[in-house]
Length: 206
Image (tube, one colour):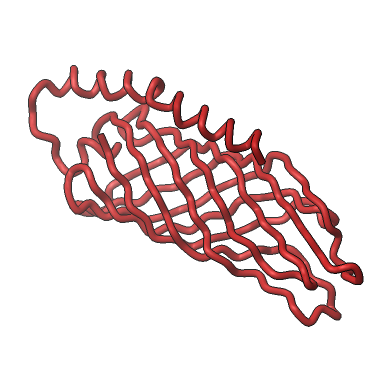
């Protein structure tokens, strides 16, 4: 856990160094012109952004058929930053916590770091669509009661991640997002399983 927090802090500390060149390039090319709704969010220019989403996760891990207590939903949180490297393409890095679910008298939790390639395109004025494809380095922890048929322990590793969503611009810098995501995690005793989520969020561009 301590190592993951250290890595997360390093990632967000180093991220501005990756985004600033893109921002500087955008400012140099645009001069002093006023940004349009799609000139700062990747639909017509370069720039960096930060975002936060909050939603509902759905674990795809199996439960024993004799289980009396087996949940699969909890709160999902994702904090991320990104930079556009073209008119429609960008990269994102973020931290996600999929919450804890009850399984056979214990708990299962999944969290991790995600790196994705992002594609964006406008639909109509102020409304756009986006998709993500990448990988999540996740860590899971499962605790159980003594008589549980669910395997206890922790696991970690890389897994596929992807998602789609809509964004709506309130201002040239602030957007609301609605998105669906899927991230593969390694779980003790079951191997690799997906955790999916539907969430609402806010995104700030600079």
